[in-house]
Length: 639
Ligand SMILES: [Zn+2]
Image 1 (cartoon, rainbow, N blue to C red):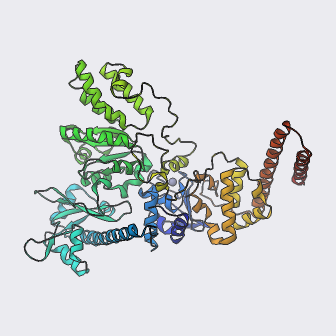
Image 2 (cartoon, rainbow, N blue to C red):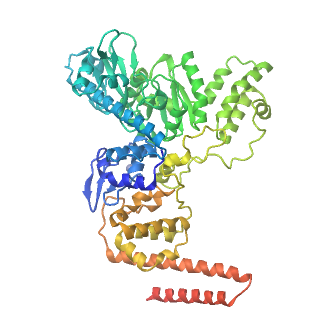
Image 3 (spheres, rainbow, N blue to C red):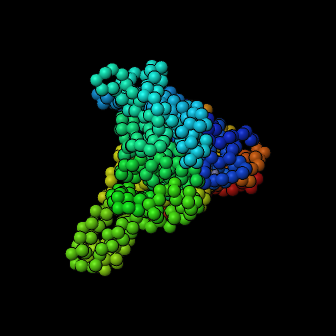
């Protein structure tokens, strides 16, 4: 679904950033804002340097430079897409999503949406119920003993909402009845099963440790149940429902997205228990596939957070087959996959218990490129026979085709050619690639880190540049990801004085009033910035409360929102400086003068250029006027 700018703003205004961030860090009033410890896990700090402005609805960390509005926070902290963040916040504020244009589609859409809402509600009741059963279990209960054996702490149980399904056949069923949940709905949520040949239902999960599976909005949509002692199946998963499609959900992502983003690498494991025990040992940048093969949708989910993935596989042949299957999927998602197998058939939990988390972290950092790992497996029985060369070329062909980035593909071709003892040219031809990549000009760009961490993090949140032709089509395209249906306003190349101008005039109503009074807008040369200031003038004339939150709104529309954030406390945020009105006014006036002066200089230059192709009396008069203006500005400045 696409959202209009009006809708995006409406939802934004109906939610308070302070409430949302307060769920993750304690904020205290300092000066005219709020400060707390940075909630992002890559920024461990003892003193508070994370500032939130309730007035402006933006956050800014003086330490790690992360900043943004309520949407960017959800995208960065919980791994939601922009449309998901909009839906989440609309729901939170009780705002109905816009109805689609087509009435028939709309009716179907509404029905499906209502069904999803009801299923989410039932799942939520069940999750709370299971969690409560675990909380109530006495100390000598087998589930307590199991938890102690696995070493799960109360914090971990809380973080992942882990629960317990009683051995009763009708424990949850009775509870749902009491909550007036229709049993056919509970059956559709796959929480109860209809009895065969007689009326009634029984619980699907019995005597199991329950892991709620959350969507990126943090709603439980399904469950995984692990048996406590011996028995089959060891893991019982909810079957798919309209709210739970396995190929589209990664277990743990809601809780681990912020770590993945912070560390810029995701570890992919198979099961809940693997993930939870790694998380507990301090390796938190993990997701789990819940026993299914990786899908292109999983790839897309991961790419929102990072391009670097390390997939953990069992060292046996089934594990290696799984690694082989996932390679083209990860490559075509434009990810940079690495592969890791643990020795002696150990699972991550065993490994961490035996060698410690630090040892695993080292293994992860040394993990080989997944392509190379698979290639080496293929070469185990390679003796350089001509027919083997052809066979291997056939196996490599779909892998090469899956890589959207020609630069990476060329390296893979070279790597494979070297190991096969063939020429690059032969391998290119044998796998249907053009003899030489023409240019790398249109490759998806890895976002460059320039300056502090903040710009890189912003860049990471943006949808990738247009994918190369052979990469999978991104559902809904770039505008879907942005949710606005329009291109972002570019702030590329804004001259410094104009940037300072924008920062100053958007800072307060008083500054903006002065800006309008002195008609500075006419002198702004940068097109993107001008658009923003025109919009600001519009809002200023209509709705002053909205004007105060403009920076927060602009975060949605501009390509480099970090440029609009003012470092209000240059001392690093630890001291709040006294506001000095006189100083501020002087700064503002100087800035106006500079912008005006630059603009006049620019005009004079372009006129002079025009003159070379012929002088007219009008042009001459214009130049003289500009010179007079500049002169008078200079004199004013000297007063
Ligand atoms: Zn920070």
